[in-house]
Each structure stands twice: as structure tokens, then as C-alpha cells.
Length: 484
Image: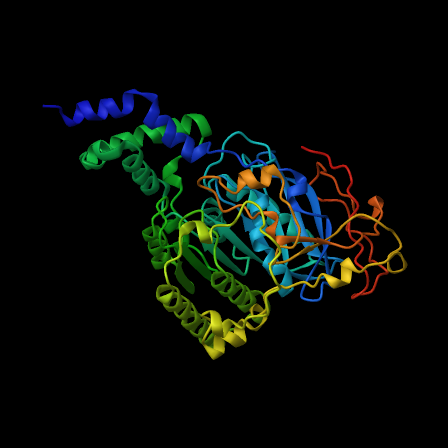
């Protein structure tokens, strides 16, 4: 009869289990994308296509001396607005932050970046939040220096990024609030789950002592390769120290990080913490109802900033709206998973959607509708403005003007973007079905081209454009970019 010790030796003697779990922790598949996948550097957004934005690309350096790549989507010309910092998952990158472009319509700016060890940034390994919080420190220091453009900061993180946001918020209450999608309660608990999953039936029937021995060997291997202790990654412990409000949501069908992890974190928060379970798994795209709740939560703490009884009342209304979303989701018919996942390439151009009020999509509490008043519009950009552009209406002919939106009209993603949509363990890569192309740009490369810089302070923002709001968009003419 085989003993538990024999099973333990069988599990740990070969490289397969140990290496596979270690790689899931510190070296999952690295996000790969091109700068063009991020879209244009100057674009329009909004129902009438007159809201203009720019993307500013640059480098920052963390306290370990490692450089990481950043993209800041903000109003053009620049003005002082709240900023949402998007923190990607372990297999993701700043490209995944396109999921959060909806915040631009609400009067916020969006800051995306590749954590060190991810995407185009320096670094060999990730740490599922331990070193990533150092990158957030560098981001916070940079945004502090940009007080003329930043009016409050919130963090929106997914999986690894959500854990990094919790760890950072425990040490710094400078941020206003955090939004966490699918965080894990502790890395040791997650590795226990992974050992059971990768070890198959044999691992599931092992005594707890044997499983702990396997996890301990994984811990030592991670320390040797990536120089951090998995026991230092305890989101529950850090959540207890948080002094900012939080919104947690988790895929009800998540088979990578169990929804029970979010419940543990929710119970640990001493500050207001709303939780919402949404249909889908760890990598699935979040639906419009969840995005509406996120926007309502962000507006509550970045714009309204209520105090005392007003805050409690607003939170009760938002919680009622969250419950309405859950009820609506449970009553909805089952939809095949393939029908809800983000396509790797846009289909034929659909007819523009009409704005749908939140009340018809789960936001049914009147008070919550007040809090989320700006969430009620689904972007449906008209194509007539740009498609009918004539030489007389634009100083420069030719080229393409890009408009971000929900509807897809005629954008074709690169092969890199299509491949990224199927990544495992990361947040869903938004394809360019959110990017619509129309019209003709008229900007010069000197006005809008940006390149990576080695300092923590990027190049200055472009001068204010003489083109008035509602006029022809200045667009973007493709310019060479320096790759790190």
C-alpha cells in the first residue's frame, strides 16, 4: 500500500507540478501587443463625436530602478479631471485597460500601464501584487506632481491588479476609492487551490499535512526565483488596514480564483465595501450592468464626495442597485459562453444603439439612478460627420480619424490583438471592436507624436488647440514610436 510520504515524493520529485504552479505564480504567458493596438494618440468620443481626447505614452521608474511603460488617456486640451488608474491582471497589460475607456465619457481620465514583468515593461517575473504595489507608488508620485490635471484618483484592478490595489490602499489613503475585480484572499490559499487542480485526484485526497508540504516547496522555489515570500501576499490582512471605500465584484463561475476569496476580503474591510457577483468566469468580459455600477461608484467618491449621513444614504442606494443587477442577472436566460465573450474581430456593422436608461438594465433604484445619472448613455457615435468630411472642412486631406465607442463600424484588429483575446489567466483583452474609424485627421506629427522617455516626468502636454469643441477633430497622423 502506498503511503502519504510516497505520494508526496511522487508529486514533488518531478518538475511538472512544481514548475507549472510556479510559472502560474511568477511567469505566466506574457502579454504581447503592438503600440498600434492601443489605438490613435488623438481621438474623439461621445454621442456627437465632439469630445476630444489624447493618449500620452511615456515611462516611469519604480524604487527598484525598473522602468515600466505607461499610457495616459486624458482630455484634449488638458484640463483638471479625476483620474482612474487601471491595474491589469497577471497575463495582461495596459492594452487591457481599453476595457475601462468608458470612464472617459464620464469626465475622468484613464491611466494604464504595464506592471514590471508584464507587457513592454522591464522585468522577468511578476509577483501577483507584492512588487506591483511599488509600481503603483511610482504612478501615485507622478500623478501628485500633475495636480493641474488630476482632481482625485481611484484604482481599478483586476485579479493581480486588484490585489496590488488593495495592498497599496492599505498604506496610502491618498486615493479616493478602489474597484477590485476577482482578487484572491491570499496567495497561499490560491496555491493550495492550484495544487489540488494540477495534482488531480491524487492531490485532492492527500492529507492536509502533505499538501502543506507541497506548498512549502513551491514557496521556497518562488523565493529563489523571484525573491518574495508568498505568505506576504495576504489580501485579507491588507484589507483590514484599508481606509478607503471599495467595490468588489467577482465572476460567479470563476474556476481560477474562487468567489469565496472575494467574500473573505469583503468581510475584512473596515470601510464601506460593496460586493457584486456577475455571470461569467475569471477571464470573461464584464457586462454593461457591472460597468454602470463601477461608474456610479466612481462618481460617488470622485465627484459627489458625500460625507456622513449623505454617504451612507448614497451607499444604500447603490447597494440596492447592485442587488437589482443580481436579481436581473439571475432571472436572465442562460447564454452560451461563446456568445458573451468578446470577439477577436468585429462583425458586420450593426445599427447604432439607442441610449438605454439604467432602470431597464438593473439600475432600478431611483436614488441610485441619481448617483449614476451619467451612466445612462451607451455610446453610439454617428458616422455622418466624418464620412461626409470634404476638403473644404478639413485643412488636411486623407488619413483616418478614430473614435472610441461601444459600436463597431469598420475597425480591424491586428493579429496580435486577436491572439491576445484568448489569453489564459488574464483580464479579457478588449479588441478593436471598441474602435471606430472615420474622417480625416489634420494634425502634424510635431503636435501629437509621443515617444517613451526615461525620466519620471513625461514630455509636456500639447498646447491648447485652436479648434473649438464641435469642430473637425485634429486626429492623428501615424508617427514612428520608440519601442522600449
